[in-house]
Length: 258
Image (cartoon, rainbow, N blue to C red; front, side):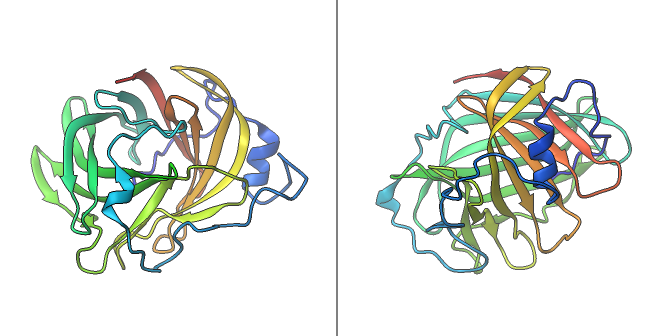
């Protein structure tokens, strides 16, 4: 996972401050009735294995918090640890890939560039189950220096070498729900938690209400602590790094639906 590295207090960002404080474990917000659903539910947790039925999955992904119709394109501004402005383009392709566990997945290409030069190019693989959960089934990633691939660390495929799929977006997000996003021992162990369903967010692309806020963590990197915001019928609009001094961001500049 890339970590943006610029101050959180950026003038173009507006979020519900009370809920942000709650996300940091300092106060409460959102629903107080305590019936937000039991944490995790039937979503995958930790390293537990799952046995997916390929017949239960589709490459037509229409989860309202992250619809992935072929041709959809998101463009983000990101700042790296050296203060360089990076451009991130995420495109849902027409391509599919049959994962080792038998599930056919949609290929989504994520390209990071610095002044037009490639920094990282990744093909991510997603599929949606019959309940509407969007699963993350692996990635083929490459990092570049001077136009050449220097590492493919982090690449994995569900069903290969013990790697397990995870959920990237639940069908019915509820406060306090937790889930594994990916699992490849020692390489990819990201975890997610739903923190709020009623955030207000402003980014260059627009202003949104009732945005979904999640917290992403990684036991392999204890300092990783990202807040991510998703707008209905758009997808990811903002990422805040709250795990490092100074924080950082990745914010949506433009979005074209497929």
